[in-house]
Structures are given as C-alpha cells and as structure tokens.
Length: 82
Image (cartoon, rainbow, N blue to C red; front, side, top):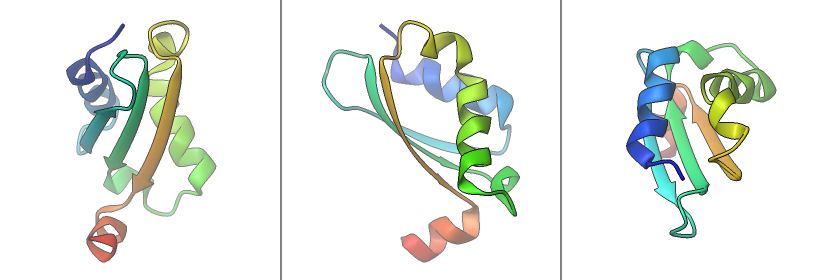
C-alpha cells in the first residue's frame, strides 16, 4: 500500500513545478487516478508525459501501485479544461 501523499511527493521530487491531484479509486491504496499539471510537459507528446510520471514512480509501480490512471496537462491546457 502507498499513501496518496507519497505519490504526490515522488512526482513533485521529479517534476518540481507540478501540481498533483491523487484519488484512491478503490479504497485499497493500490489503484489511483493521478492528475499532473506541469510546465515540463510543454511540447511533449502524451506518451513522453506519461513516461515522465512513471519514471518518478518506477519503484512504486513494481509493487505498491497496482493500477495508475494518468491525466497530464500543461498549465495552459489545465486552464482551458477547467
């Protein structure tokens, strides 16, 4: 099991400007919905953005995290969406 705050911390350590929102989808602390907003995503394709987040959570993806759903945005995209 991994706490949502740990996921936020790991992502922010890798993407220092990131705004991160984490939701436990099942209550079991191993299936998460994560939204990441970062300038680091600017100009990068979706697959590269996902890899950036997965790289930040690579150890957790080997065990405590069973499923991860990602939404990744630049701040401009997030503002348009909101």
